[in-house]
Length: 121
Image (cartoon, rainbow, N blue to C red; front, side, top):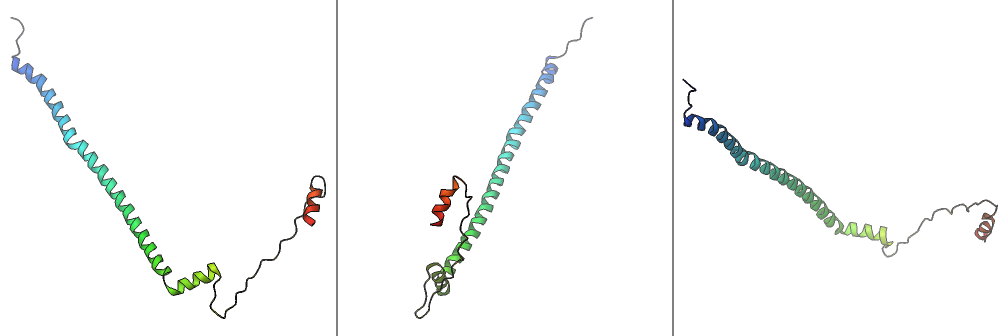
């Protein structure tokens, strides 16, 4: 007798099943994995932006507190006395000067001897 013939529908099923499985797998990747990666990346970006916003808001609050403190009469007077040597009428300002530095000593050999003579003048 000869070889048994395989019906055409059975051969098509053997070829069609892997192709359909591959297409289904690729469809799951396209629909499930890629949008999920994008979603996770966006979620991380939003979290980072939220952290940065919180830091900036805290910094703004600190600057606003400092600005409010700088507007008080006591702070204005303190800064005027410290930075501009301002005093109230009747007060006197005394400045304490640093002790003078010791004179610079250089070797008394050439080429330093002329320099030492100039420093001593």
